[in-house]
Amino acid sequence: MRGGPFVDLPDDQPAAAPNWEFTTQYAKADAPAVYWGLDDPTNQPDYSGNNHVGIPSGGSDPQSFEPGTDDEGSNKSLLFKGAGTLTSDRSFPSSNTFSQVAWIKTKSRTGGFIMGMTNPSGGHDRVIWISDSGHIHAGVYEEYFYRLKSPRTYNDDT
Amino acid sequence: MGPAGWFLYVDKELVASNVTRTNGENYIGTRSLQIGGYADFDRSPNHWPPADDPVGSHYFRGYIDEAAYFDNKQPTAARISEYVDAMWQQSANAKVLGVVDPIFSMSVAGRTTTCNGETPTGEVTSTSTAVAFGSTDATAQKVGAQDLTVSSNAGNGWSIYTRSTGPMSGRPGHTIANVSGSNATPGAFPAAGSEGFGYTTSDTALLTGTASRFFSGTTQWAAPSTSNELIADETGPTEVTRCVAYRLGISALTPADTYSTQITYTVVPRF
Picture (spheres, rainbow over the protein chains, first blue to last red):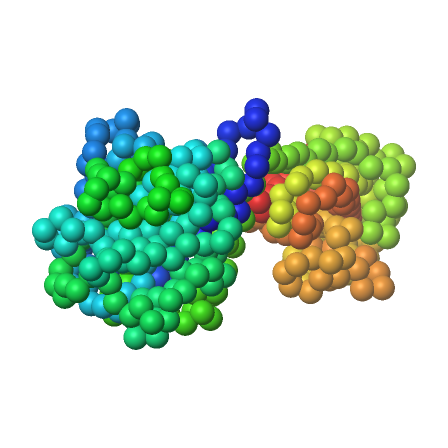
């Protein structure tokens, strides 16, 4: 999970979108179950090699998504505009030991869901979100909601 | 999350943990990964966000990149640190908002002062487009020179190459032999009374071959080639003037004629 650097830019400059490329050196070496590079708003190829393609939903483009463009005009990240979701087209085995990672840059002081897992019944678990106040939370559910919360806030790039 | 507990890292910092919580939903099976939001994330019966730190939207507003899920893996803090370092490096590359446009120019000018130990002959006229030796005889060799000035912000510098259309020639069958030295191994100029045409360069730090091969106590000369050959180079952004001198000698039996050849300079930047 990444919340920074959240550089405050002057008002007359566009916010630079993240430009993180797929890092095969680390990600592939650790054999992810799913890895989405999020380079464009269409279906997301799975760089893990497991072919769990990300399917957009929750609104049609460009209402939900648009490419995050860097200063060179390259599309290197995905801007979620507050109505869109990407979901893997197929479910995959998930054990009790897991890790999940995403890089974010906020565009709003309104919090929201960042990532999580959905079981075939529609139940959610392993959820990560950012609150309106900017705290990063992680949550799991087993009879009760269990949560972790970052002490600091990470939504200063509005 | 795993047998060691449950850990939340932001950037490379461990910001929250629960070492007694080693699993989530009591369901072992398949799941789908979802990012960006889902309907009812913040509504009953979900209630993921706690009451004291609510969210105003089910959906995230901002950029998400490089989302991944690793099953049956719980990385070490060191591994997380390595991963974040790698991503930060790439992030830093993306934060450059200024663009420096490439600058690249070369100019040629006649030179009347000494070049690589050779002083141009007074009656030789050198301009940006020609070195005119004028009338010559076997008793006095002549020297002309040109300045080549390159200005560029190419990060890795630039190289200047030269080539010719062939030996100095006049009417069919009339040529003046080039010197025997080559760009790779320049040599001394022939003695007066012998034919020879060649060039030398003031660059004594060439990047390929022997760096100072055009001056080893005395000026060394190379025969012009019809292929591009290196005569000057730099390794970084700079404005530098190098000179190239040409020397002509004839024998008493060199046929009377007007001789010429065409020299082409090519400069290649390395951005």
